[in-house]
Each structure stands twice: as C-alpha cells, then as structure tokens.
Image (cartoon, rainbow, N blue to C red; front, top):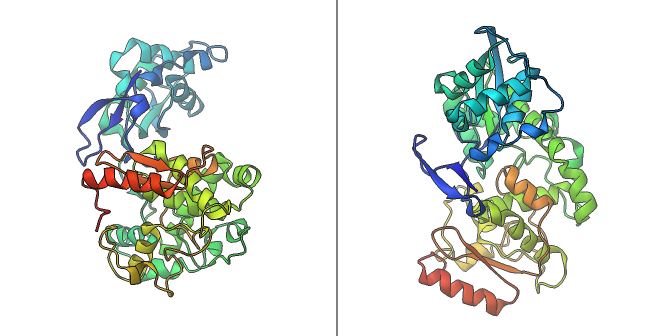
Length: 390
C-alpha cells in the first residue's frame, strides 16, 4: 500500500508518494496542543470496524456553535478522528464522521495538526473544516526531533524575546521543572548530572502562553515529556526488557536520533549501542562515535565537524566526558529524541551487530558484526561520497 508522506524539504505544499515499507525519515514532530504539518495517508480511512459496534450514525443537522480545539494525530484512522470529535462534542457520533469521510474523496488529505472547529456540527461539515487549512491553529513553537537544548533555547529566545541566559538559568534544576527523580539514576554506576536538561525537551509544537517566563515555558515542555513517556510506558519497558535505567535508554535514543537518518534504523542503531556498551563483547565496551564528540564541541562553543575532519586530540580529549573511547553508555543525552527514536531504544531488534555506517545520500545504513565488515561498508560509503574518509 502507498501512503502520502510529508516531503523532506522546506516547502510544506509539496507532496509525493512513497512506498510505505521504504518510508524516509519524517521531519514531522508530534504536537501537544497546536499545529504539526503532515498527512495521515490513504490507509487512515480503513478503521471503521474499530468503532462500528460502539456508535450509532446519529448526526447533527446544523453548522454548529462556539469553538473547540481538536487534535488530529499522525497515523490515525478516520474512526480515531471520529471518536476524538465525538468526545469533544463536535459530531453526534463517530460513525457519522466515518460515513462522511468515506463520502468525501478528499478526506484522505486531512493533515496532522490541531483544528478550530465548532460543537454540534454536521459530520460532513466537520470533514470540510478539517480539509480547510484556514482552520489549523498555527500559533505555536516547534521543537524538531534531534535538536539540542542549545538550539531550543536560542529558538525560544527569538520567539519570545526572553534572553537565552534566562532559559539556561531556569534549566539548571530539571527536577524543579517537573522531571521525576527516576530519571536521575543509572544502573551502570555512572553519576547523572542533575543539572542537565538535555533529552527532556520533548519534540512537539507548543502553545506558549502570553507573558510566560522561561521557567513557565520549560515546565510546559517537561509536562509534555512526562505525558508522552507515560503513554509510551518507556520507563517500565526498558527496566523490564533491557534491564537498564530509563536514563540510559534515553541517552541511547538521543544518539540514535542523531545517527540514524531513517526511521527504520532507530531501533537497530540503538541495539548496536547496547551491544557495544553492555555485552562485554566489544573490545573497549565503548561507543566510539563522532556524534558524541561533536556534542561536546558544541557544548564548548565549537562547531561540529564531519568525521573526516575530526582530529585525534578532539576525539580523545581527556576533558571531554563524551570522548570517543569512554567505557559504557554516554554520560548523558546528546539531543532531544522524538517518538520513533524513543520506541527504537525501548524495543530494539535483536542482533549481534557492533558496527553501523551511513553508506549513501539516501540515508541507508549498513551494519556489521566484525571490523572487517565495517571496513567493507566504509569503502562503499566513501565511494558514494559520504564524508568519513580523511
């Protein structure tokens, strides 16, 4: 089956078909309250049987009154949307919305986001309002997947006029902002920096209250982090399935978010990280990643470098806690991971791979068990122009 996906370019008006099984990495982030552009895809409308036994086809016959904000999420079925509208008082029954969506061939073009609708609307009118971009609630601040806290604070400062220094100051006590204590423990003996907010700034689009302070805004973002982690059952899953702390898995997700260019590789890359850090079968039991070295360069005011430009003294700087050969999982997150990366770190596929490398400009990742495997994959990458060969 084909699905419509958001084109990986800055023009939100361009779309293309892609085979579902090949899906490229989405630049779409998930929403808390407001706009997030994307599409549901044609398959979103084959969910009628999920609610057919629970709702009647009762429908309102008027244009509706008042205003209500409803959210359409990525990957939802028409039945899911109908149930959301029913609970919000927009339509009289979910079944009526599903029927109206089936009657309107354009309904598969409804975009992900939050919409201003009316209560007690005729279902067919609700479909039309969801198809009208003018009804998207567009005032919001978006944190893309993979941004560092430095990028987030700089963008927030431009959005709000609040100095970056105030966000830095407010971020010094993540627990006071709402991060639960369970996130500041590890099973590997390493100490968690309780002043480090990296990894907790959940990628989403947020409605920023007027006259909000830096603390108010960060509390809003952390509240969403907690909500999303609860939905994912992240802590419980990694503790029971992987026997590691939630924080260590968050670190792995943050690295996979940066290293894997395609959604399908988030889990496999996380597994490589676990294999290196925890199995004892990788010679140094370390990660050996340029991305962690580059994170430290950014933290210290230097720019990131491509792999072929990193110097040995930068990779092995003893003052760098994220350096190339530090034993075990990295000391902290290097980005703020989104849902796909978090799910990959929670449920990584089983493998005995210890190596991975991007081998082409499409983002294809090749994996290897031995260093010889890795060297062969690197030669392919170099031949394809990937900047890893000095």
